[in-house]
Length: 341
Ligand code: IMP
Ligand code: MG
Image (tube, rainbow, N blue to C red):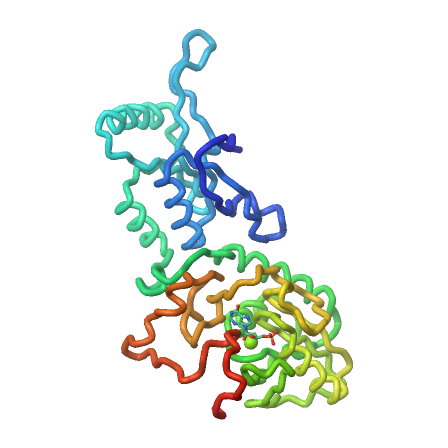
């Protein structure tokens, strides 16, 4: 594993090292020697590619038993089994690096390494099937909180746990539209049980802290006597979930449990029991993997925060994107409920 450098630096999640923490974004700090490296790491996070920073040094030259020259590639990408060395513009350094890389190739023929400038690395990622999300989305993203790989890993763990806990039963998974679309689709394929799936659509009145909820689409299934697993994208104040749980309980199911992908615990107003939680997220508005901001960004494959100025001056006039009449959710300024629909 890499020595973490003592100076310089940008805070970055290192997905590869976070792996042992059951797929959670760990916020480990890696000190980068150059801004270009920090940016490369950010791009890798953005596309959900696991990386390690300077994990290994390759001895190149020895005098007696002493290593007198070594080469430490900037990054290792375990998913691609590839070392990456970022290039600089200083020609002298490039020539020296080329010489080292040639030596590396001779001494370690099985090691795959690429020598990349910025244009090259975007092309490389495209080649491996990562992204890109639309240019507008890339501009709007502030930070990727949970990468695609971390989501997939955690959803698999949740699916395995549900499978174990419901052994011998056939639960009914109840999802709340529309934010749960991605999570439900992935989770249900990770559960090895004869399960059924149903959806509800609920609209909460904005600006109404009492949590008045209208049911826009009711369940199609009869829940009486069934083992219900409510699947939620994110639990914020807990109002939506609380209302939903009361509604379900009144229909006399055998049991009700809750599986939430994201828990924004800091904002909880109603204490609702969560049986399964994917990730705890900070008190920030998040988008992606089903979650929207004004109906946009649901198709990002990761969970991210948006840049503040982008939230205010977003792409709301783009063709096909209709600026909604309603104020954005969670910015509860108006005390009047929005018109129905
Ligand atoms: P709650 O009733 O306050 O717990 O809100 C739950 C619902 O609000 C979720 O199901 C989401 O649809 C929405 N929501 C809450 N926080 C966020 C967020 O950060 N991003 C996107 N939607 C959110
Ligand atoms: Mg929702």
